[in-house]
Image (cartoon, rainbow over all chains, first blue to last red; front, side, top):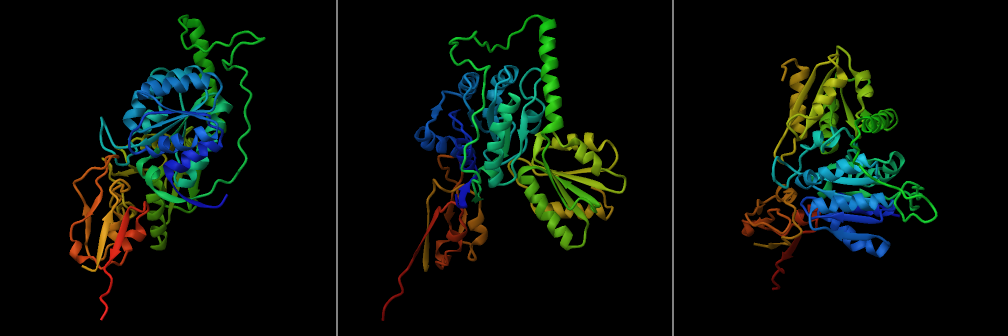
Length: 353
Length: 74
């Protein structure tokens, strides 16, 4: 298929259909409306189910049901809507059901506004709902990645029997870029012997998240934690540019990483040794990779569109080996490359923050 | 006024690229709200428009149409 100019949200939706998504349940909210819009138009024609639920809570519980029945299923929303889904997400994680949840982040807290932000990092990577669970969290940095990581998300969800979140933001959702769908082939359907597909000639499968015997639930907790540890070993994804000789490494994901990349390129033209480290998987976080880059004569500058969330994970990874600085914009504002460059210059010139 | 900008308010996502691209300060973000919640752009100084189509060319959402005044025949 040729390269097409597509909006991020639409590329994501098309990728989901190509990845074999058979059911979509959602509820409208800006800036992700193009996802249900595209799904409503295309999914039924291509053998799937589109349903606009009566609320976000209903939508996530429909996802719970469809995932339990073994379908590749997706829902999407934006920050306040994702908050509403948290109870269901915790249930799905506890039931070890594969599904894809898309959060096209907008600014908050509260209803906030409809402009882009990265304020839901903690919610996405630290659990978000109740209980000890983790999502696999993928952070696209371009429209192409909105598509590629969505396809990957369905595969990871099935592989690990775990919900996967695509953590994008309003800018990535709304912007248009060329995108190519590399593989025309659909991903292979996965055997799901645990699914509740009608117990014909076999014992019934039960999906249940209630376990009131502490000894038993502790075993479940340990099994889940062991799974998350294996995910940490196997599924870390990142991109590093110009970090080998760097005096300062910019760290950012999604839209912030694009801004940081522009700042990095200008800094290099100005003769400054600046690199960029972009986590693509936010859980598992590329902790080891950042730690290996940390050394005394090197500094880090984390760029975010939040009050300072991923910077905490960078500090944990760096573990005191290098100074870690922070710069941000909030409330739907996007930092400019010039602002980031100015910060880079002030740090490298020893003017501190 | 040699040109006229027509805004498809529902397509506009308030990215402001057209405002940056316009060499004659014709456009600005309006106070109106479309069904997605964005404030679409408006031509607040339409008399400055030369019909150069820079704004329509840069608009990623094809939200802008430019009408040009036909040159008068002599």
